[in-house]
Length: 558
Ligand code: GLC
Ligand code: CA
Image (cartoon, rainbow, N blue to C red; front, side):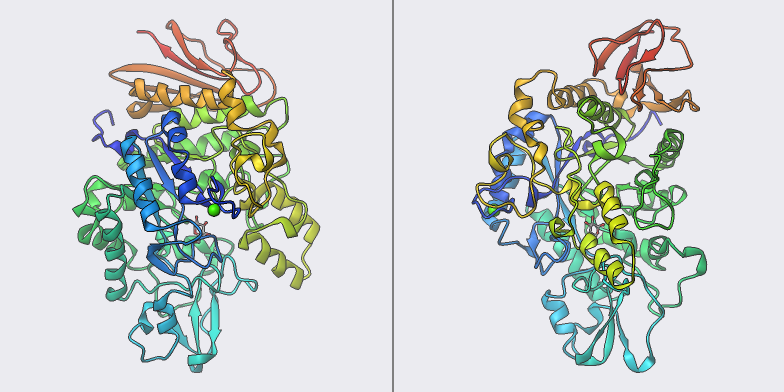
């Protein structure tokens, strides 16, 4: 520490755009690349350094682009390759990097590889996927995340065989044990890097290697099969090979693992620079805080424990020491940050949104900000299954229906946890459809858009949006907030998350009240502080008290 090797991606604030929901340019109700192009100045004014775009490639959209039919083609609904080139140039002109999404654990069943593969057992593409001949009986159970039967083996009559799909039936798993397939993936990365793309976020990358004997999953993985999927025999050999064959040829780019199933004690395997695999990883342990273990994404009715939350982020700060960390509180797979970790009531929504953003922008890790969180967008909380668009919610509902599950209970939970909560259209203004589209949006707009929208917040100096801009500027001007050591303070405080950031350039203190009551920290300052930012007018340092959801960043003068 202190002597960390510096890189642009360690200093960057990464802004995630879910293109389907960001801005529609042609009135078909679907966000698109020209929509993003029309908002380039908005992005530049946020003070962000990179954009991560969810998949924009040709896809039948069974899982909104995470089922790819052509890795080097643009989804027609999103635009053309010319639009893409213009977007990339427009971002680069504004000094913003572009990170794309590599979905290489599986393709679409409509990808030509799979179309060929399923034709015959002798087809040259047969081994691009995992097939199990049915005359050998059914292979050991594999759990599927999205299948209506939760079964990851799908029988295909044409060749009397089962194929593997950890996600939906339309997302067959690619066979990384086949060197030919691996070469294809490296070619795809190279294609985009030759265009000038600055990095890839790698979808469920820990799942790529499989024991092709498909033995039964050991009992200890019951209820956490993802942890088993993340432990394939050749995973790290493949990551090293990918690094050697393609990533290291583009040293200015960044690779980010979606660290599903990865434990803190194993993260160094991915991100320790000496191992030459990947640059960063984002973990799920933070997201799991407050979930009832074994339930289907079911939150504990009493909310989450801040003590546990602090322990998790402190543990990961340490684990990331061997490389570099990431931090996020929401994305397209999670409910809205504000509804999940803050308080979306009228009284506290803006305050708690600012408090959570303060956390993200002052930790020793690269922050990922999901679009809309800079405004304090909230969960839509759909009551009716007909309003849901996400295959995860729809298929789980079907599964429960077929198996006598409690559907009302399921909907109640979905209001808090469904992915569609974060996929509603971005709220630009208070005109119809929040200015997202002139047509009918592919998913309903959150009715709170009159309160929460860009135009309104631009005019209000106290808005969440302005506060976010102040935070990105603050992180840029105080390098200790990026590279300085992190130390948890007042660990047993159940209301306040307080920590110190410190290096040779200075010492800072961050204090965050996660509750709707005034709370105190159990320490006093022995040096005179300078208040750098707070979401209230001032802070009561004589009492060391924080108002409801108050956040404060102090610089401690030596
Ligand atoms: C990742 C993506 C998610 C997708 C899944 C399958 O978790 O973030 O959106 O459904 O992988 O590709
Ligand atoms: Ca469109």
